[in-house]
Length: 407
Image (cartoon, rainbow, N blue to C red; front, side):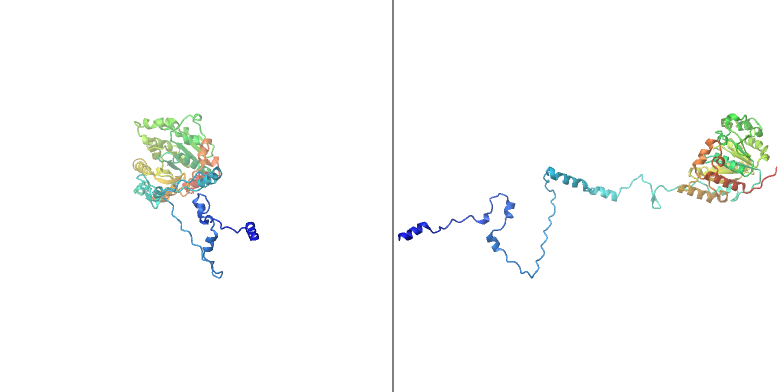
């Protein structure tokens, strides 16, 4: 008995332990998220559903429902310095969408009271037709000009300034002189541009056209030679500006130039009269002294504005002073084929004046503008330029192949 008691004391029997804390309580952390995603205990894993047989494929996982963003999401936490850079870069690179009201305004703009009207599908003002009256054919006495024989007295006239009257007078005269014609250029413009354009300075001559008109000086005393063979000029000075007033009380004031030109016309094949840009007494003198009129027309809209008035004045002069006067030639100047306006003006002029319009058109070139500063016509200044070629062709049209006169 003693032996069994000793064995019990040496090997005591195990006592039942106190029940441990349930595993469901989990860790003592206060974070509810971590407690939700904690690993399941052995008892929970034993309660899970048994796995499906390996032969059947597992169904695809269901997509999580996308929740709509809240109307006013909470402000994001300020990122740390390490994460702030990529976030800022993403915010800058992402385009900012335009607000909806501005997009609606771009799609449906409000009507503008000052906006140009739409013509033929294009925005812009409707082009006004050139102001060439319908009675232009009646003022021109027919559609085809009368053929003229040498000598010919031609007045280059247009009351519109800057259309190329002086340029045409100088260069057409030089081109006609190249064809072995004796040409006299009569400068009636007080500015004297035809005189200086041919290289004649005001201090190099004694008499001018002012002396011929106001003091009855013979025209042959006024004629000066130029650097171009067969080309001569009757120079003008600023004194001509007072002729308009001084001629008012003069007797037979409209025919003073005609009497002077008639005294020398047999010595030349062509007499070109450069008229001033006006319809005053000087221009009337030039029209009365001429047999035909050459009208330069700039290929722009304004050049057509006063053309009908010029034709009326030519008709009045031909009715009362000079029965042989007629508009025989119309020259299109400063033509620029790159612009639609030049083409439209050329078509309008050809539609109204048909056969009187020259086939060749004088182009707008820099060389034509530079030649007068050297006192030379374009045929001398730059013989191979487009302007020189155009005026040579114009000279052939104007002369119409007239035979040379025997002297």
